[in-house]
Amino acid sequence: MRLKKGIALILTMLLTGSILMAGCSTATKTTVTTAEPTAAATKTDTTSAVTESTKAAASDDSLAKVKSAGVLVLGLDSAFPPMGFLNDKNEIVGFDIDLAKEVTKRMGVTLKLQPIDWSSNILELNSGNIDCIWNGFSISEERKAEVNFTDAYMQNRQVVIVRGDSNINTLADMAGKTLCLQAGSSAADALASNADFKSSLKEVVELSDNVTAFMELEGKTSDAILMDEIVAAYYITQNAKDYKILDKSLADEQYGVGFRLADQTLRDEVNNQLKAMAADGTLAKISDTWFGKDVTVIK
Amino acid sequence: MLSAINYSSMISFLLDGTVKAVELFFLTIVLSLPLGLLVARLRMIKFKAVQLPVKFYLLIMRGTPLILQLMFFMYFPPLVLGFGVDRFMVAVFSFTINYAAYFAEIFRGGIESIPVGQQEAAYVLGLSQFQTFIRITVPQVVKRIIPTVAGESMTLVKDTALASIIGVTELFRNAGSLKATYSSVIPFAVAGLFYLIMNSVVAAFYSRVEKKLNYYKG
Image (cartoon, rainbow over all chains, first blue to last red; front, top):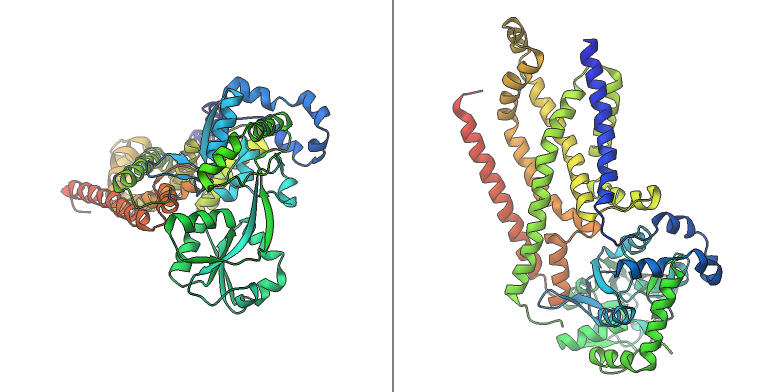
């Protein structure tokens, strides 16, 4: 009896031990993509890491790490046309992808695209699974506290889209109507900061993504969508839809590339590359391919 | 570009996702069934120091959502413990220990339903505890729990969709990406069909196993 209990006890300890060990051993199977997770975790509280760039540079080897690994891992939600999405050959393409490809070419590293769940984007960044978030990532004060942004490279507005045949022409006409938007997006933030407008609505429907929002509009289960003007314009042109975009926007915002707070050298390098691309006209050329005009704002 | 659906490329992308889901399924089943049996045996030991951790494990695994467990094992190690983890391995690990908990209770139910008289008879005949367990008890237990294990397996096939929350490119996530590419729900309808096909195979498999084990009644 004693012996059996002893064996059982040892087995239990072995089991718990092996579960922990299994957790540890998965670490050795990771590829080169991990940066300094512990450093990132402790430094995310110190927003001064952004301003004290010279002090941080001394111990900040983020750029060196990426260069020696030869890979920059870009995290994106691959269901966000036109910034990053799948074409009909199932390759990830998009405006942000073209920009990233050019930047990494100039940096002399390969670009690795890592699809992530958008609501965990900053989590993925801080855990080292990706090196940057580059997917129509809007710059905001809350996000700046957790993410090191490049300069804004694109302007964007949060606008209301309605069906062409509807009688809604201004924000005031939206009183008593149903509005839908993508949960956790900057559209949701924009609505929250327009409290009067929000309270005039009959209902706000939160959906997992913008394509579902368009389906709601099409199916008349919602009267309007609040989303990025860039994405809306692209969708409307591509699908030749008869939708109207209301003139007055709810928020003006800018897109930037997001890095870990501690990764100052990496962020600076990408920023400089984008600036160089703006100077020699590559940025305008890429913008032209996607939008028919230069929508970039980097100087 | 958002365009008319390219069916062949949509199907091939969904098939890639299906392969991932099938890999996840097989690895989980192969690992969690033996683990579940072991945990069931430990759970039945009348020794508090063994029973309490096992009961705690069973409570946590069955009492919290699997989707949360996936997120925990994906982000807790790098952010708090300081090491990176591979997405797919995290999914396999998380599914395995979750399903092992369910299988453990299924096994325990099956084992406890075997009449104690058999153990006494085996003891009298000179069989050891271990021999009794492996050669007398377990074969009967297997026969009894097949329908339940079949149900859990079919649930597992569907649960592979949860791995999308940590970015694993399995069937459900791939269907979601395609929805954006073609602005249509057809990829989801096709994905639903693929899940149905996978589960039909699973159901048919267990049905055959049941028939094979039916060489004696009870």
